[in-house]
Length: 69
Image 1 (cartoon, rainbow, N blue to C red):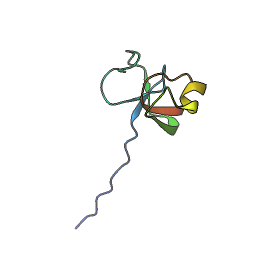
Image 2 (cartoon, rainbow, N blue to C red):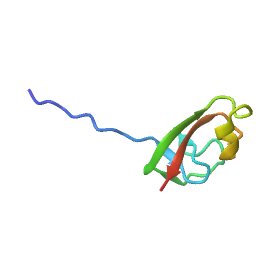
Image 3 (cartoon, rainbow, N blue to C red):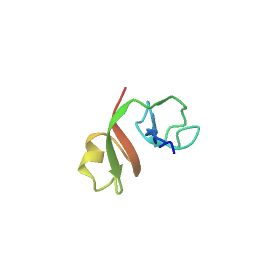
Image 4 (cartoon, one colour):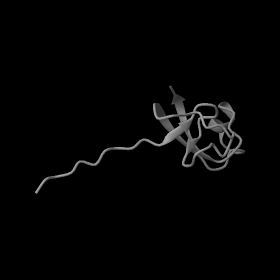
C-alpha cells in the first residue's frame, strides 16, 4: 500500500483588491489578475465597525490577504 500525500492548495488572491477569490474573476473588482503568493489572512464581517477594515480601506465584508506578491 502506498501512502498518498495531500498537497496544500493555496487559494488565489486578487492582486488589485487583495480579496480571496474562488471563481474565474474577482467578485469585488472584476479583474482576473490573481496570485497564489500571499500571506496574512483577514476576515471582515462588519466593515463599518471594523477598525482594521477602515485602516486598509475595505468597505465590503469578505476574506482578504494582507500581503500579496
